[in-house]
Length: 342
View 1 (spheres, rainbow, N blue to C red):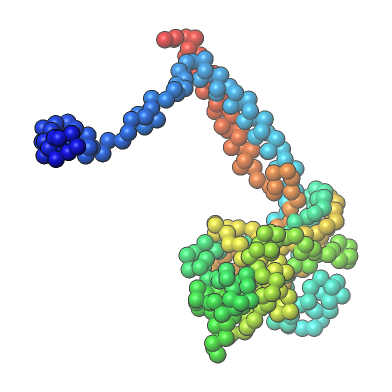
View 2: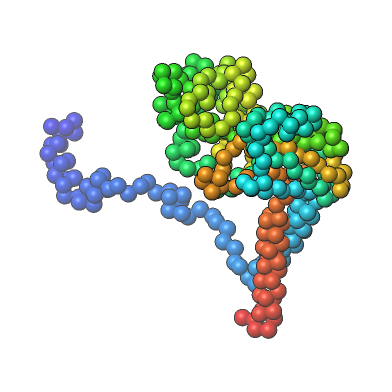
């Protein structure tokens, strides 16, 4: 019995007799709101011919000047590209060859290595800093197994020195000691060297600020030192100074930032003096890095920069093309609207 003297069974009977109420109780329909029913005020512009033509004209007026400015900035960049082929290197087998390079103090050649002396002419004045890049073609740093060949924990902290689970096959030595840094990326570190001079005067190559500060501070530890690196029977690339922490090994840090495409450039250093036009630049290259076994190519690149970076005409051409296409469409729609209006 309920407090009003009614029967609870009567209430159940009333609910059963009202099928609409029962459906409402079991319905999954969301609670009504203007948001869920998409009844909020909305802007629905009508694309009239005037709006469309004006929009295309606006895009063209904005894009074309940006493209011209980008193209002119790219044209002002002075770039020297020298391709290195296998046939132009001469092998150092006699001390008489070494005396020349030692006197110039360009590099420290090793008997049995390949050296190239090249004379490059500066086409236009190159204001400092002049950036030195090495370019590799047909080198797939984005290969799945290659990219995985590193241990970020090991690179960051000395406490994770033995964390080499992702570095196979360059993870441990024959006596099971951890390799630091481990993995295929570090193992294949680029090891060609370059020396530069003008009129027998040595040009210093600065390594300052060639690596990202964020990488030096957060990805490579100041307490992590090379250990057992390139100590196996098969040497992949450059060796590292075991007395310098990884956070200061800028060549390694630059190399470890893997490229997305098979043709890429990486910063080697900077020449911090101006190079005048028609200057003959003597370059001594120690050819250590073997790209010939897999059909790769190497290039030495000297380049200045502008406000958009290095020499790259694509950005300017893209802006000019899109701006020109927008103006073409605007004129076409305008003629159609005048000749045959709706």
